[in-house]
Length: 220
Picture 1 (cartoon, rainbow, N blue to C red):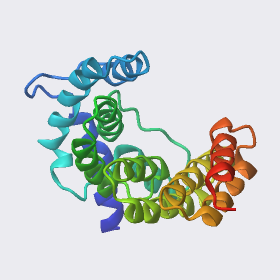
Picture 2 (tube, one colour):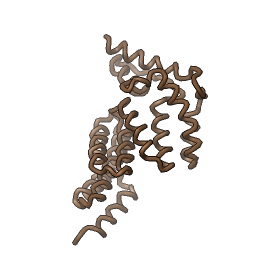
Picture 3 (cartoon, helix red, strand yellow):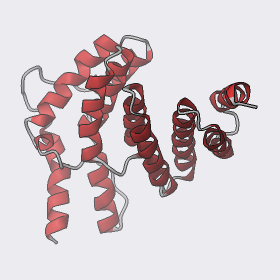
Picture 4 (cartoon, rainbow, N blue to C red):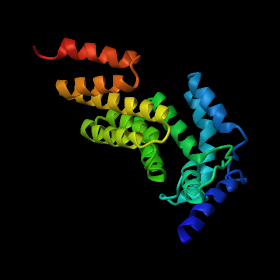
């Protein structure tokens, strides 16, 4: 019962995010930030998500182990055996993901890694967050660590209930493994990972291009 009370409190706490703190987030800021990022305006996107994150960090997200709103809702749903939704206009965990994307676009991967490390601690069971963390770790030159994170992301994706999303994130994680193996010139492992990824996303041009790269660079 105490676990359930804590989880309910975690979900209820997200309603406080819009309280006036610093530059108060406005309704729709997160979606606007996503649109700006898609339009190549990473700096403007960053400016919109920062207040969302700062506001949350003064409240529930100041605890490094605080659960993300969407993750809390999923656990509550499992406990209560019922369908319901939690409406959060500006989800602070998703805002952290957008911030990391923006920082990577702005060629600031060390900062992005710090954001993603924090994000993964809030929702360690999210393969999307973990895959982006693995990518950023790879960009920062830590290939072995990146490979381990991609493997963890694949395992998490395999357990997702939504089979379409499970297939997508497994493919993403396998392509990440393939790239890391290729960078380390582990040609057989790289080829195997890319071929496995095609099982889930057979139309991936990226995987096919990388397989061709392996074919051309592998010692004969």
